[in-house]
Amino acid sequence: MEMIKAPRGTKDVLGDESRKWAHVIGVCREVAEDFGYKEAMLPIFEHTELFSRGIGDATDVVEKEMYTFTDRGGRSVTLRPEMTASVMRSYLERDMSRLPQPVKVWGYGPMFRYERPQKGRYRQFWQVDFEILGSPSPLRDIEVIDTSMEIYRRLGINNLSVLINSVGCPKCRPAYRDALRGFISGSASGLGGLCETCRERFERNPLRILDCKNPECKTLTDSSPSMIDSLCGECREHFGAVTRGLAAIGASVSVDNRLVRGLDYYTKTAYEILAGELGSQNAVCGGGRYDNLAESIGGPRVPSVGFASGIERIVITLEGQGVNIGEEPKPRVLIVNASEEALISSVSLLHELRGAGLSADMDCAGRSLKVQMKRASSAGARFVCVIGEDELASGTVGIKDMSDGEQRTVSRNDAVSALQTCLLDWGKR
Ligand code: AMP
Image 1 (cartoon, rainbow, N blue to C red):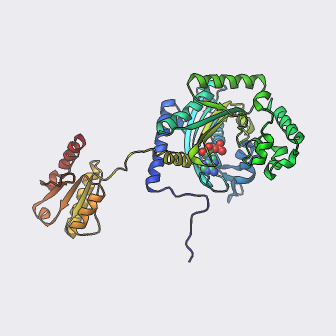
Image 2: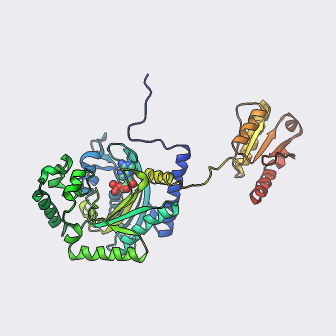
């Protein structure tokens, strides 16, 4: 029978790699606590409408990438392609506008997009997500960008580029869309100079043409009008306040007029953080302001700002930069045993050691004492507890210090406290 493999675009995170993930999530949790974000654990699937209305019908994510299915009750549901829409849904549904504003939320988990898999791009990928809901202040944009940069700083990641732009608002964006369409159709090659995808985007979502990776599309839009020049007074002022604030906190940020995001809900600030280690999928983080998302999913206006960062991409960057996250914890104590009878006695000692909070393990396969000793040494155990024939007969255990090979005998009843003392002394060395 053919062996069943994992679906394309998914990844088993195992062993050493999973420690790196836990480390990343741990650092995010620390930053969340220091910056005052509360954790939210939200459903992995939602009503499809949340995403089609929230993210936007004309986006690649909604048009081509969603894992949508009809459940047994005949409802259309979708595995979440991102978290922001769910966070906003939860804010509205749980009436969080009654809490002191803004509400700061963070969370992490798997997201699903049917994309073409490649390095750093998966169909199931994990994001950490930070959102500040209920504030129009540019200071919150700065706080969000600072939150993301602090995570990478604490992780020991360097050499990131932070790009920022303003994508305007429903007041000023239509005029810019028209200006961009006019520029493209008036260019020498006209619409024909665009790739097939961008020709489709031209009517429905022309801003996305600006971040197309196709070299011809890039050349065509090289000298296109800049969004920044088309901003309305309010958006211009907001953008100025954000860039001034970022300068005040010493953030090194470049303005990139071509930066647009793949999700329609962004207004005003859009930003991305890029890492050279990632290759063509170089964004480790993307975020911005989304003042109209709440309205598009049936709520009142809730001006908000946030970001998401892909955990796989953070880990690739950590590895690419050779960041050391410390050694894997090793069992402190290993019990080696000599006979069937000693096995039972070892199990009860192991239970007591673990119950006392010590990291301990034992051999359960009845291997020879010599082999067990070798394994204890290669596993990096600090102390080995020996329960051989003599120890069993005399109600004792041997404790061998693996650093100098010295062995002493203690009574079985004192074994746990003796090992605790040994480990304490060892910790002070
Ligand atoms: P987005 O939700 O598209 O704004 O993406 C935010 C971040 O999620 C990106 O900067 C990436 O780090 C990560 N990301 C997005 N899509 C994928 C994917 N298909 N595979 C892995 N990471 C992704």
